[in-house]
Image (cartoon, rainbow, N blue to C red; front, side, top):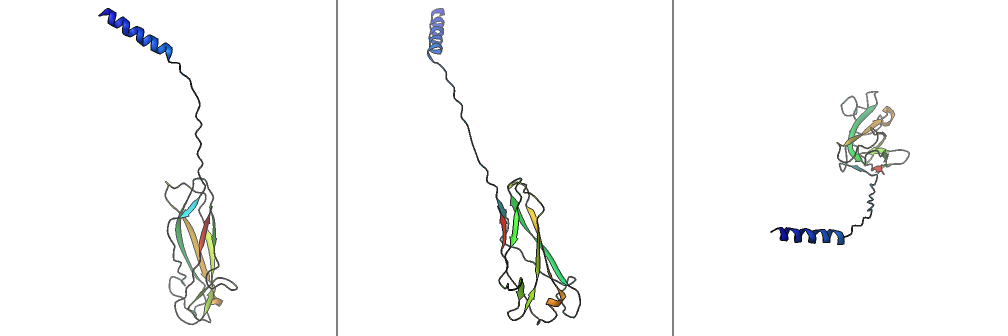
Length: 152
């Protein structure tokens, strides 16, 4: 029995002396793109006068606000822009098909991205129509469509 153990030990020792180890270093690289994406296809901004439809006899500007969710790569500062809309001439305008009212838009992001695993952030969107822009228009529903863009 001792002979078998001795023979197994010699074979194991011989194999360990015959197998020489070598090492190399593997460098692993990855690149994360800084990107921002809206989390919804769109939002609706309704401009009202004190919470009601616009009354042209009331000398109070109309306003409204909404939000749209977005996410950005962690640490990336988003840049937002709003297109001119479908009825732009001297400014953005809503229309009922006959008359137009100029309106303003303000976009306010909360800050840098928190990553795609985090909760969505909200871009605040505010809009307004000055009294002078609704005092001489006909009654009806007015609309426009504006493309929002976020980069990177």
